Length: 278
Image 1 (tube, rainbow, N blue to C red):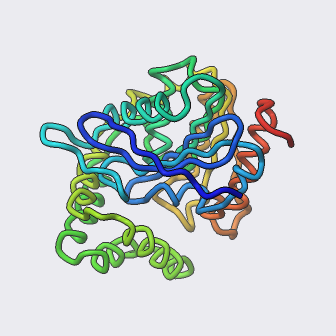
Image 2: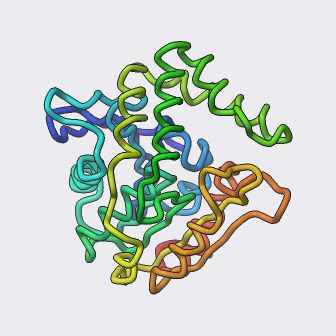
């Protein structure tokens, strides 16, 4: 398998950095808040081997991409505009599937609503936005930002696992630390932690009802991942006219954490769309 080809895309006064690999219909991967482009299918090569061209980039202020420039920030309007720039530069014309995790899922949904005819398929992994912004959620994100500023990666990880089910604490701490070490600008991370949760990707979940694009929604059980509620993902699947819902079995690690298995679910979805072989 050929090595990934690295790319840069100019968007909104900054440079987004990513990589692409494979041949076939294009699939853009969008990671979550505090993650990087590696943490969508967790470095699985399954999508590439399945006959898809995988395009992944670090969101503004994440990984290797530039932080927001003066006068700009980390709103979903800006994140969706970044996705539009990457889609134009890396996947102009032809079929396109957007695969987003958490913040990336919200960004992908916002892009789909703004460009209803551009996507061939939509994969939403662990959506958490349910149409409202709650003070308690903002307090949690602010605590995480403050912990990162005061204690660096160690302080951030300690805050992430605070109150988590002990059965999952060690696993969550390990992968949180690994992803945080990939960011070159932790100050940008702290700012994104405060700004992204205060932004709305769209108004209400009712807006999803006008998206006719085929969709796959991936839910996580609340025991391991309470901040991406199963009920929210289930409502996305119910609202989207052409969606189906998948999840792990009770007691298993979240499907969103299992790169190989998640890639297989996405491939099966793409096969239903005629984009690859089943």
